[in-house]
Image (cartoon, rainbow, N blue to C red; front, side, top):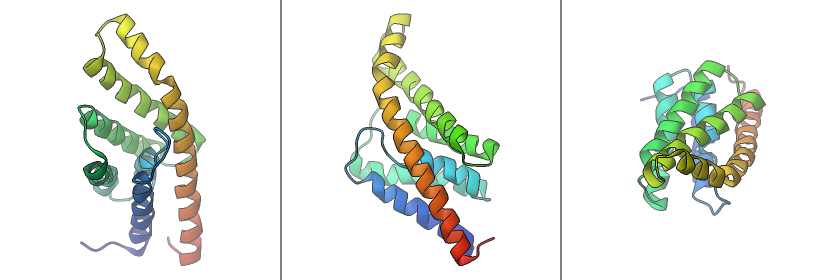
Length: 161
């Protein structure tokens, strides 16, 4: 399986971002949502765009651990990558929408798995998750900017199409 020069550079940015997930970090300040959006907006081969965030999660989860919510988290990243297909560009709106999509999908999963399936359980689950959403937005904005501007810089230097 041969990658073009552009795909190799894209893949290298994804690999570095994934390795960062293994470093200590505040809760939800991680690069994977940015990786999923970046893959969805930059990879021409859609199957790679969908697979890369999932593979990134799987390999880092081997070290960090799996939980009951893991399948729902993976589903959320598929949604973020699909959002990248639709948005076609990484911008602040796309990043914030990605953060919101991840927040809603994963917290619906947490509510379903760990809270009473009542309006009170729903409210409690989402209210308790709000601080994590703030961290997610910070991480998603930071890592999205790092991926986007880092890739643009590298593409210009390497004269990628």
